[in-house]
Length: 424
Image 1 (spheres, rainbow, N blue to C red):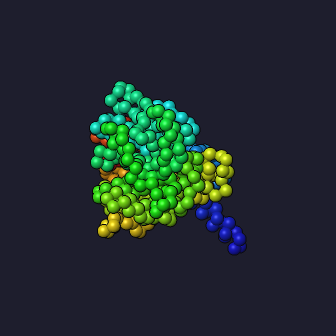
Image 2 (cartoon, rainbow, N blue to C red):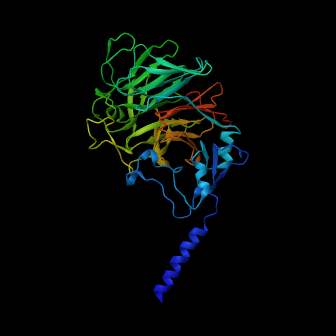
Image 3 (spheres, rainbow, N blue to C red):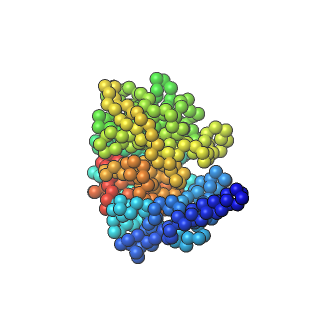
């Protein structure tokens, strides 16, 4: 009799679980009925009718195919609306306010599909975006001229040249670069040999002149600075991960991955965080009180083949969260406390990272961009169907969003409720 009661309870529980599903899970967004590029997900699709299946990298699937929008839900035909959606909205009140009435995703340029695309910086005074392809044998950067109709793209070389730039931010008219390379390389301008070590560099975009700001920690080489942010005092916070070694532009790392603060006024370089597996993107809230750092520990360097580039394997159980920290001022420079995870990337991990003027967080993750609240709530996703490594706001009002990756370079226009900060 007890066995029969348990069976009835089991059946009733599963019926109740299915009863929690209220179709459809996905629908055309209000006010955008005729726009197939925008889809609204109801209640975060918290309940899906079983069976449903998502390709899992933990089970051997290609990480690029391990996506929410690729989930198969045979009993809910509405889910196929996500297949062609460029904008997937999870929070309608905020998401539709960000997108406006006419969001548009355009592919502007094809790119090398064997290279990541990093460090995009918009220079308003020139109306250009300068970005990098950190890759073996690519010794110049790229520049997108937004004064042309349509925009054009060309090689860009500084004096002296800088190899393998991975992160960039604008501050008081100068571009600050995080560079990964420590190899001698031929100058794209005249073929002369250039010596370089990983570090932080300052570029005057109006003259093309570059100055090295820091390239060692008490005589030891940095691993490969990845991304950076400059605070209101001019102090530079940067992540130092292992990706320069991964793409074979520097030697095997000698430091644990960490985040540092560099003070140009004194030359002091100080560690501020060392618990993330591979610290990557970094940003600070508009009020200067919160720092965000992304972890891309899904890339695993241990036992990766040394003769295969990139020198890492995919670890589906590695770190892929965005962390928030409280910022505290002190005489030597600000420090951070109260580490807390606020977002677990639903696709791959967040690489390039920006904070908008309104305080929204944007991370290039897998095949698109996560748009989060300051607390890590997923508001919407921009899907492009190919790998995206970084992003940048541009335009007079910083209301265009440019996306960069091996899948191409894209422009998102028509946005209304989101704008880039001048330092972004």
